[in-house]
Image (cartoon, rainbow, N blue to C red; front, side):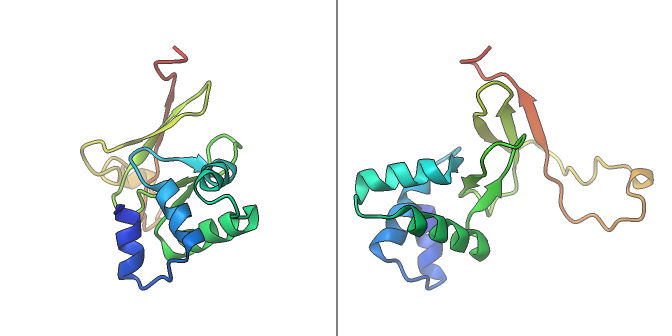
Length: 136
């Protein structure tokens, strides 16, 4: 059973066959799939699942706070099931591959008080860019 499925059960989310397949497709480390990629993988498991159902399910998962929407450089939104462990992203500038990274330290502490301009900063999302091993 995936961590995402367990979290959804704890919330009492009704797991239809379609919802279950979408959650199963999103299971794993470093998962950052587009909606079309989720749909293609879901169709392999459940041929009758519609694109609209996949999009609606992804939207619900985002609203529940169980999946994050990740956008990089104007590319298609990607869906990240690692919603409950703070992390940043490492993005390949060539192919767009995304990996979760968990650096040491608090990124909010790295922002000097003088650079906060009076903001009460509550979150930091950092994107590291470079070339992955395949594109290097």
